[in-house]
Length: 262
Image (cartoon, helix red, strand yellow):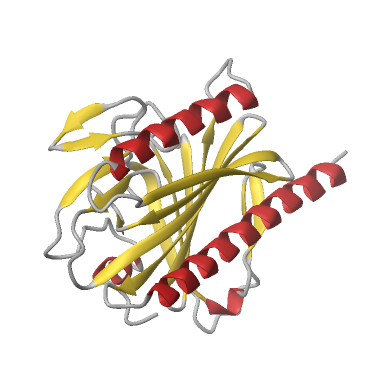
């Protein structure tokens, strides 16, 4: 993987971020439950949230870690805990709360850089795990059809898998942007049109539901447009392995803590 993109360099800061990929046009964005026409972009919510926009109500606040010996454990209240793989390669942590503290947001910046995100929100009252997962899956199918209708197509790949906590939505996205006017990645997802030159961002996502909480783990990295197919496959494999390790750690840590408290 070559030099990092402007988007990923900007992402290492703790201030609100702007899009920095130049010479490419933002055409599709996915956020907010349902659909709405906004500035020429069709909007869908990856997590089925009804909010029109995502705004930080706390943070994001961050800390640089290089040389600080972070052990890799992160937890958020009693919602989850997770051990990040290879914590010595994590250079920065950022966290915050959005939309009146209804959504938790955590981001770890790895050398490279590769960025790993954990976002949680609450299942709507009266909806079961299975019902909520189905609603999220329907949103992703709808978003995939919308994004893939634009050339070059096949930028929004999805499937379902299994985990210790049940079904998982698995996504691979290409030409993804970071941070749109609607809010931060991965709550708001935007795509660039055209092949173009320069960096192309790739992301993988794992979305699942447990009890009263929704979870999304997302990992994003960059390639040059001139990089080979083999480099693309290698990057997507690296992102996917990190995402799967985080899913397994989060589900194992939560289960261990629940058993210990009984």
